[in-house]
Length: 94
Image (cartoon, rainbow, N blue to C red):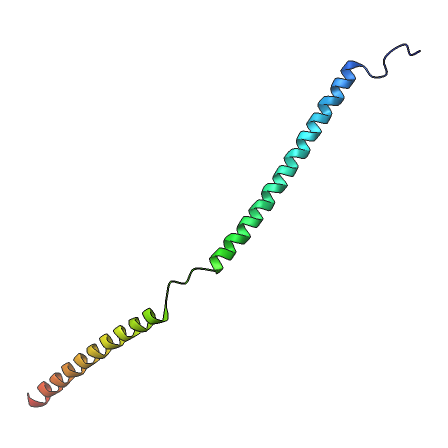
């Protein structure tokens, strides 16, 4: 027969506390690793969504813009040419 217990209550309590603290540390490490992986995945999909922006321009609207600008620039060019003609005529006859 054994005269005393193989493990005392205080020793058992210490082991349980140590085991609890170790499991807490492991859980924290696993949680931080999980969060880092989630951030990596989220940043990847954010980059992908930036690459694939929705199409807002159409060929028809772009063509209309170019024709508007073309007509505006042609009108302004004609006005400038007429003003230059007036200036040259004024210089020639004065």
